[in-house]
Length: 189
Image (cartoon, rainbow, N blue to C red; front, top):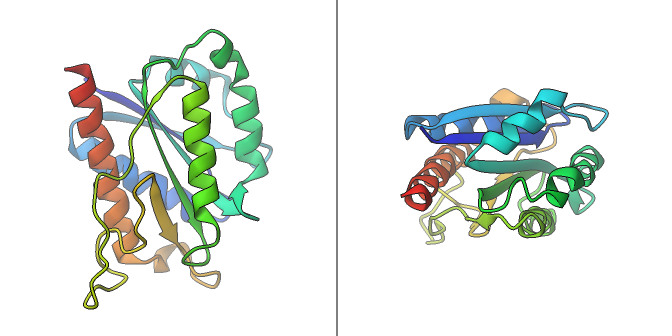
């Protein structure tokens, strides 16, 4: 069975909902998915490191704050120098997602950061696996309306509750999870 870990930080609950939706998509493809939340102090449970080592894929998730990952996610990334040193994540599939309050919000910097982290660990990065909805008739409820190829992009307006997140972004998150699970299956052969 395919094992996927989703390690994420969520400041207000929106990014957590994205992580849960990505997990639903991956789970629908038969993957066993473990959510690992980075806490408000930038820490993960000690057992999380074993889960990450045992997983076939790791999906990274962070809100975009001030044009990059949150400091809590950065603390986790810095702590990953131990598995980096022993190449524990080498050859695993990697993917990433981010959420911010605006349509752009420099989300691309966050996704680039996450893909660079994966490259440093010698992981195999995969993107969304879908074209954007970019016709005149496209709406925010269409798949990949924000046009992410390198990673999943989600927007949660600053005054929106977790329950008010854009349905199209959540549908895209679910499709993204399915794509990552499919990529892992193809890599595993």
